[in-house]
Image (cartoon, rainbow, N blue to C red; front, top):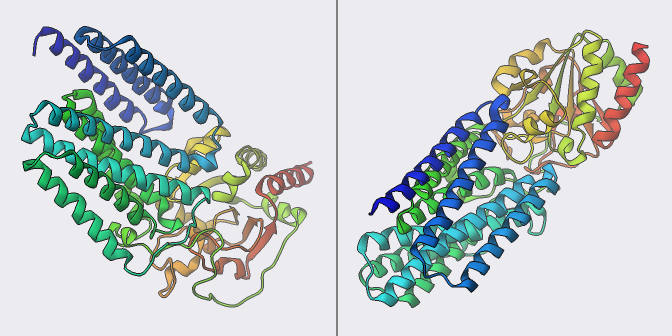
Length: 469
């Protein structure tokens, strides 16, 4: 490489350093915004360096520049619009779409490089290995992420979708993709590359379809790791250090997050990939729990329990996100704190639909981060809690997880049932992702407040204020 090329690569390394620093700053909420800004700055520098490199190399026609600039502007506008307008409940779907775009773009880079090399009559062996890794991983990520987004959006049935011989088909397309890739390393052929692409796309579909809704957050994290790996391979293909480092960061962090989420559900990644867990939002109960009567409660009675408690733990769930009631719960907590009540929040690792879902929602309502306590920290406090207020959570508080024979057996849960009194805000008795009845709802010390989370919290806050006055 000449001096100019070295300078460009050093700029790429500086950009990658910004990515590393940004990721480090995202470790805590206090510096997370700055981390995003540092990472964004690194990406802008990398893009500018790429444009400078293309100008230096030359050979790009005016039409080519017009297409690239138009694509960049349209992509930036679309990304900005979706990021600003997407609801928090739809964030997992958006992440899946971003995974699909990232994986697909990385695969296209490798496909273009390979076709160009074949046309020129030279395909380096090292390049083809990374090329096919990029094509296979990127294509799997693209199709798998689209299916995952469809399941989360409700466009595809959230239940595990299987058919006779589905696992054989899954294995077959994987073997075809890998086998054809190995063949291409020694025998360049564009048409065989098409077979690799189609087989990898098919594998992405057959891999995600059998996975149920409850495991979908883990799958999204896994596909995110795939995206990073594909991007790193693309970096090797075009000799771009920024892509290699950034892709490796995403791949490693996504892999670690996937492992942590699987552990939080007490499930192995192998079992998740086999599928069969989770049947969507309204699946039928798989195992009947202990019998009992459901006891409903009105806002005034619930307010009395809260207002005269000494310690209250709030357990947010997907129902809170769906109703966009984070500001209402923050207001209720403030009213209780003004009364001298100890208030904290119990955050399950997989509450909502993606890691950190509840943390981000509550941060929007300016809830002090120290009040958000992880499962291991908060569980010992439930026996000393006067009232546990559950807002839209379901499977993560179901005592059925402690006994064998249920769809969630062995999954770590929040020990809500150990509180002295439990109030559950829920619109109906519908089951959660796992599709089984929640045994907490028939517990004698549990009261059900049937209402939309935002409406219920507004009524509770008004009723508590009346009592305080």
